[in-house]
Length: 139
Image 1: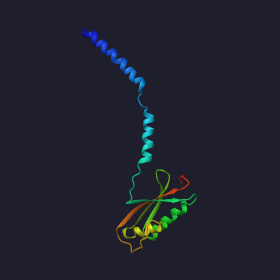
Image 2: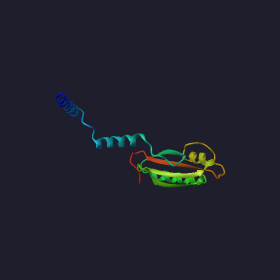
Image 3: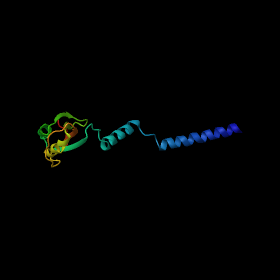
Image 4: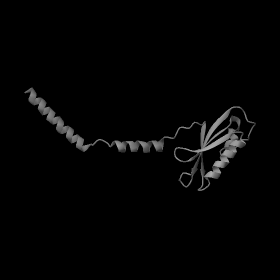
């Protein structure tokens, strides 16, 4: 009798499992990975090594001129800057300027209105991202 009960329970469990499995198939691993990647791209910003990040916009064909102006502004503030591309293909400029001239640097970019002072030994690292308003990354 115990054997018959065990067989009946096993059969019932198999029928229930098969019915549930057909109604709710497991999610595709590929689909799950793609959904997680899209979600991460949309919600998570890439970490920055800089103290702050400024995003500027440039019209079509103006990205190079805007990048040159940012590098020139860093030099005028007593600092230096280097240009590269970020992970999303946008122009990224990493500028290091004296702490007391960070406001003047941002003013040159149209971000603040602070006069420039004599450079100090403390520096501030500012990342400037230039986005093409046409929506396509610039080289």
